[in-house]
Image 1 (cartoon, rainbow, N blue to C red):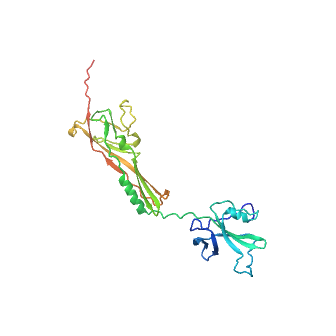
Image 2 (tube, one colour):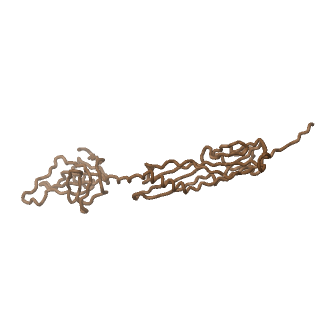
Amino acid sequence: MRGTALLVSAAACLLAVSSPGPAAGWHQADKGTSVETEDGEVDIGVWIEVDIPGASEPDANPDDPSMPPCYFRQGNYAELNAWLENDYVAAPDPDETYILKLCKTEAGTQLVTFWVYQPAPPKEPPPPTMKETIRLRNEAWGRLAIPEPTTLTAPREVTIVHLPTYVWVPAAARTPVSETVTTTLDGHELTLTATAFPRRLGFLRVAMGDGTTLWCDADHVVAFNHSRDPLDQPSNCFHYYRQSSVSQPDLRYQVALTAYWDVSVACVFNGGPCTNPPPVVPTQVLTASPHPIAVAEIQALASPG
């Protein structure tokens, strides 16, 4: 115990209240410890008791047995240090609370024993059940307004064989959307946030109508730039028709576009990630209305000479 610091481990101390009031009395129980305060007796679990070497509790005064020679007082580390000898020091810790046992002796009042504890952190609330997180997940998921895709092409209505025909969806139809649902469980907040975003790989599945199917990644589904050469576009979602659509019903191919959205769900309870997060949401599949496009061939006559 001697040295420049008094090392007291309070890791095993369990506290049921944040801080007891002034101690009017003290006793050690068989099952844990309790202290009597102005508000009544408070169970505080197991405290750590430290005896002061060389100090002892004096005998009761036979002339006046009603006057106990010792009494209890609650204090902090500064008050404790005031009673300790110079070679004993309690390290400053504003979270620690001490109970001092002071006894009246012929040499004056002395500290003979003290007890120390650190307030235990508040008990963690029970985590939400899987049923509760799934319920909120479904609510957030159900509120997601994933935009319906609209097929855009360039050229829009009539294209030419052996020239690229680009396909994309409007910017609003490829922008992530999010919804958050919050509830309270035992005074603690449970929040689930569902976010839908275009699938990075294979966002669009495009059936061009001639038997060809394109798979276009989200990063490459961008609008046709009319200020650039048709053969020099930032998009790689395009198709070369090899035959005209003259043999097709209504003389046009039907472009069928399907968009795939992934959904992530973030679950937060009491400021941290949920211990019972809900299952993942399946990929959402949205289909656009068929987009008709005519494909023409350019015939050229060549003459010798």
